[in-house]
Length: 79
Image (tube, rainbow, N blue to C red; front, side):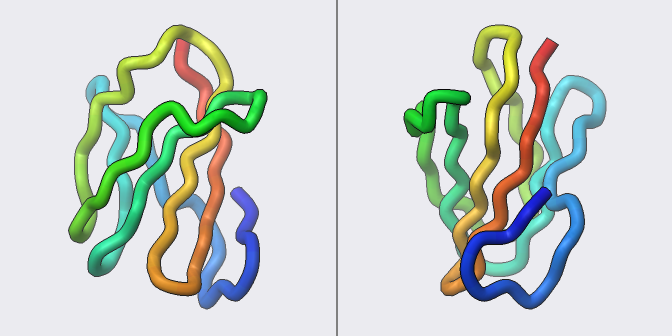
């Protein structure tokens, strides 16, 4: 995981459990799924932490969480 721009924290914000990704978040944020070519495949508003199924083909993706001025990006692998 790496942060882009101002960040108040570090670490992993998404965890895989029981077929879903658990996204840890406080408040309202935008969650984006990005492919390795930088294309945004999905973008949605979330409020608080959520459990989410990510229905994409097997591959490497980036999750980008934008919460105010904080932008966090985490690489995920879907098998």
